[in-house]
Image (cartoon, rainbow, N blue to C red; front, side, top):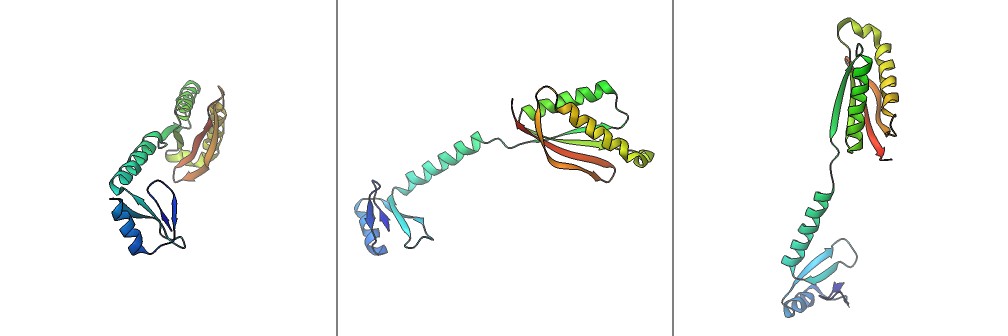
Length: 158
């Protein structure tokens, strides 16, 4: 199947005749859909086609922002005000569209009090939901060695 330079359908033809037709226009024959039956080819200026494609890819990359993973580290003996400050910082990260890894680190004999780490995580997640901050838990809280971690991402701005 061959498509002409102005977009009209020229129908089925052999590759030799399609190449001759493209040469008569001083353009190139470019295969758009190779796996289709019959293959779809287009008569285009290949240099211009490639430039336009690269330009659109650059614009797409420029507009898409990769989500950055920020980390907030807590300790079970953290003060109330410090916890509120960390929650405020996390809300800022979430409002910017970043993901936040909340990590509670237990040291030494604190490992015997893992329930305190789990309570602190629940309390911190409750503090995050203040000030109209909506989030979704991307990775549920889990133990990783001496750390209790969870990854949260923004649901959207309110």
